[in-house]
Length: 346
Image (tube, rainbow, N blue to C red; front, top):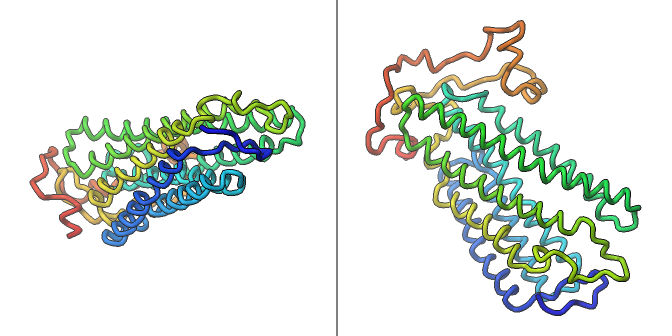
């Protein structure tokens, strides 16, 4: 990566090709920011996908700061700012995926494994725990003046949070697959369902690969002591020393993620209101009363599947199946050409 700086932090001096890489991402991210903002405004989906433009903004700002840092490689604050901005965007993309799956479940309520509103609240709660562990661990591991025992505690917390990210993402994918299988087994055939589901699979796969990269990266540097007089930057793992790992497994993967949602935005398939659902004939869209959850919020977070109603004293007093009262029945049929939410929105 070039010769080392004289800075006590041993920040790597970036070569011209790294400067080029950082500057090439920024204008494309500017386009994504513009496109996603336009789509949100055109389709009036700020409540459905509010995180997409914000993620693009974070990435754009992060790479702008990173481009500046390639010419000011001795400035530690610039480097930290770029890392914070770039690393803050993927968790928001995960939140966007949680919200999108919830809206898909609102659209096909009769195959939903749980109340659609619980997808975002439950997984956001779990992600909040993960982020809290990560922040708690960072406060210990980043302070080189602490004892080895305290720093090891911080590293353990961060490692735990990274591994839990894999667990949470796997649970989310398992929930998506469960819903997907129910649709296939019932013979439900509508592209407005399967197109956003495929984008969710791709998006979460990219995020999982990125998370694995972060795990490998952190496990390789957790035991290093940068302030030790004998510290040699060349002793760091190649995943940290060579920036092409970052540009492939962080920047490029998230770049593809945003590009995919520009082309296959979920609002092109899903209705604006979550009260509109697809009838069981797989063609007709009906505006229903909405799927309400009368339980207290804390109970919806602790018990997202409403197991108390299923196995407890309130058995049989679950949610109202309003889709059974719309008068539309019969076996699923193949949707006619041009039907769906996108045409209805026009």
